[in-house]
Length: 261
Ligand SMILES: Nc1nc2c(c(=O)[nH]1)N[C@H]1C(S)=C(S)[C@@H](COP(=O)(O)O)O[C@H]1N2
Ligand SMILES: [Mo]
Image (cartoon, rainbow, N blue to C red; front, side, top):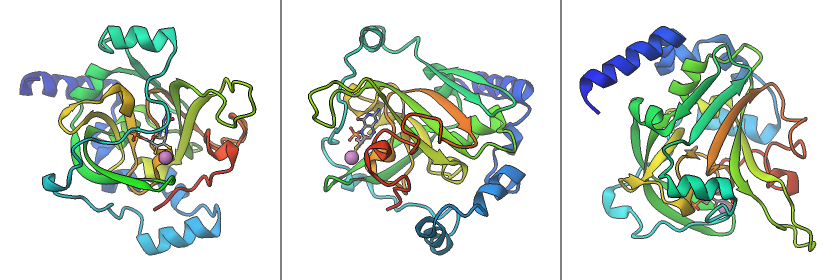
């Protein structure tokens, strides 16, 4: 896109949301809702890790020469719903990401809208609890810019990411689980500079297997926290009422909510 249209987009985003000036890390982290997250005691491991790691410590970034020739895919590789398959055929032009819940300005963003936002590119290592890791280059819109436009309300504490893939019988009890994949992160993680709504892997549109058209990258967290196929982001005060109440599809089945590496 041209500089002029980028400026226009930014201007209209600023006018509608009045918030892009808040996007700078410092001003955002001084707001009350981020401060509240910083001082919330949610469990010793997380608190202690945060104390040692600092608040916005960057995950390690790698060189181009470290990038794996093929980025391994895991979990859902191609959501089988009619709806998703139609989006694949349409090249995801009508895909929308809704941002709603405890926000002043609910948003609906197309992939084109996300691409118009200032982007970040980072080469990072993905670590899956199943015992493998892979280095790839991700490009996307920093989630904090999207949140700054949506303006979280003071009581918002988490983002819940709802995905387009239904999970089938992951507990192997012979009955298809009709739950969709979902995940959540606190607002500290969501405003981290390396937390992206990523639409590109290794310089190309995100492959279907890796979460097309948009997936989360929260680089200080394990693989299962990296929600793929994102359709909706809900800001909530608590996730006790969502799914099994543990903050994520795998958390509801026993994984830790805090997936810090
Ligand atoms: N929507 C969705 N997101 C998901 C999963 C999934 O099955 N569905 N699997 C998770 C797990 S366990 C891992 S390791 C990573 C895999 O991402 P990749 O396919 O790009 O390697 O996605 C995570 N996010
Ligand atoms: Mo994983």
